[in-house]
Structure formats: structure tokens, C-alpha cells
Length: 228
Image (cartoon, rainbow, N blue to C red; front, side, top):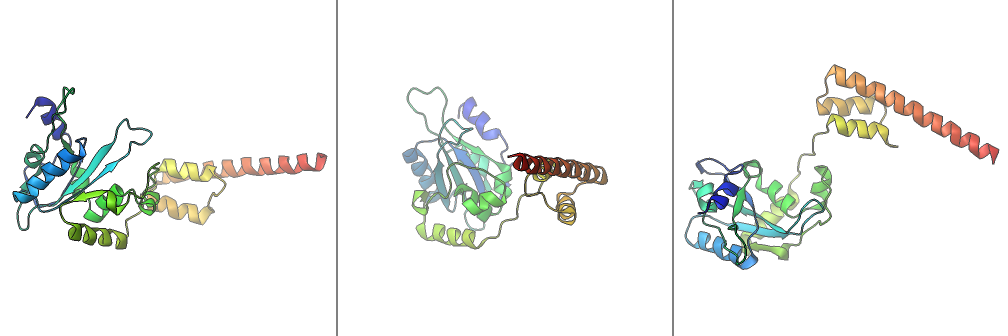
């Protein structure tokens, strides 16, 4: 294994043996990825896998794969070691292509991981994510078992993901907008976001200022219409 591959695999990787599923990103070609993952399944190193290739978003430069692997039944897996087996050397490229493990995604529920990989439009809205390419189709996924993936797909469809927690920045944007909530609704959102008293006072004052600006603008619009 080259230093480039080892460095890529070390970023955020889970340590040691794990019974958790593993989610990662890869830049391998389709035949190389499908072949390597198939070998891992046949060799009993992983249980199942799915993978889907994402088109590059506006802040990305190239297409990439989202992959999820499960451990074999009743076994633990060293995911860093498994990932080191999924590599590809492409002619003309100095670096070996491999997998980048993400410990945060590995800890997510499998339904969360699949809904994100699908860029499910409802899931993205709940999480406050904006993507150009949404709702990847079932037939775009690679897997070792169509039956298993169908079961995972159905579970994800029935899953109710938790909405993204609002931040102070979200609430400031909200009070600036034309759909600014009333005092009680805004207080409820502030409590859900975990704002402290100082932040709430600032938000309340900012809302009052925005409301005053909107009233002035409405008054000016009415005056202008009378002059016409």
C-alpha cells in the first residue's frame, strides 16, 4: 500500500475491530470497485454492500462513489484493513485510488446513510441540504444482493429522519425573511435550537428591527402608490 493511499484511508477512519457498518467514499472506476467489493463478499470479509456514483456538485470537481458495507454475521471487522484491499492503479495517474472511511457516517443508522446516498429530496430538505442532483434511482446502485438492497430501500422509505437542528444563523435568516414567525413561534424555535438568554435577547431585538424596517417599507410603498 502506498503512502498516498494510506494517508487517504487514515482520515476519520474507525479504529480497530467494529461490529458497525461502514460508509466511505471512493474514486475508483466502476469495474474496479464492483470487482473488489465482490471479492470481499466472496471471501467472507464483508457481508453485503451497496454503492452509487454521485455526479459532481457545484463545489466538487469530479464524480465519486458512496459505498456502505456491512460486517459478516456475528463478526467484527477492521474497516481500515478492509479498505486497504480496495485500490486501483490507473495508467497516467501518480496516486493509487482507494477508499476514504468516514467514522461519522459509519455511526449513522443505515437508513440515514442510504437516504443521503440516494440524495432523497425529502431527506435533504429535512437536513437543510441543497443538491443539484437529487433522487438517484434504484437501478443506479451496485450491490452484491438485489434482495438485500430491496429490503434496505424499503426500510429507508419508511424511516423518519430527524430534522437538522436550527442554528443561530438559521434563525437570523428566518427573521429577515418575509415568513418571519410570531413571537411565540420564534421562541419555540429558539428553545429547540438551544439558544441561551443572551442569544434570545439579541434575536428578539433583531426581529423587532426587521419588523420596523418592513413596516417602513410597506408605508413607503403605500405612499408611492398614492402619488401615482
